[in-house]
Length: 200
Image 1 (cartoon, one colour):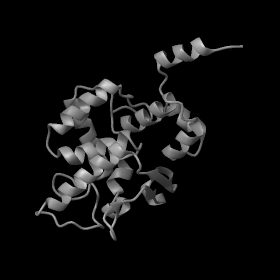
Image 2 (cartoon, helix red, strand yellow):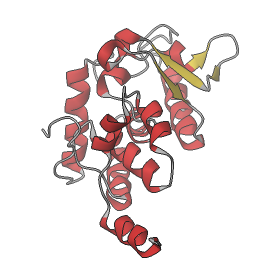
Image 3 (cartoon, helix red, strand yellow):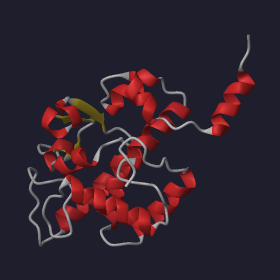
Image 4 (cartoon, one colour):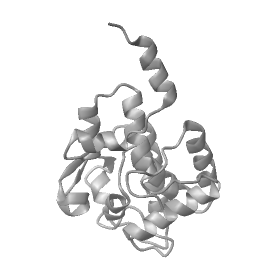
């Protein structure tokens, strides 16, 4: 598995291929939600494994929170971090998965239970979640990817779309901008476009 921070950044076509594999496989709704939490929110495997339903769903009115508070014990470096659950695609796949959880008569729906359940119905460990991502990438024929690929892709795509690195650093939960810069993969097409626009 590639060292953290050096995992493959997926192209749009590779992500579509991965998503197609996930949608046609077992636990499609859960795995789709996991993909979007990785690629759409930039979460680490540890963070996803520790999420509970009540982190994302308001028990009083059954609506999604717009902001997820990750406490220090959930993150790398014990640093509190806020995740913004405002992307419509992420919201949709998450609600689809939660609805499936509610309809599952074998497992009672409990707001304090883990958000993502393993095949056996228990919580994922960070390691078992990393292994699941590796299996999905293998099935999609994507080499060099790991559970950290979504996080790297998240940072790279935001920078490519012109989001300032300070905002990306905040979304990633990094202590410094220099750490975020290590996550961003240089895209030759983007670099050529920047060079074309260079003026003195």
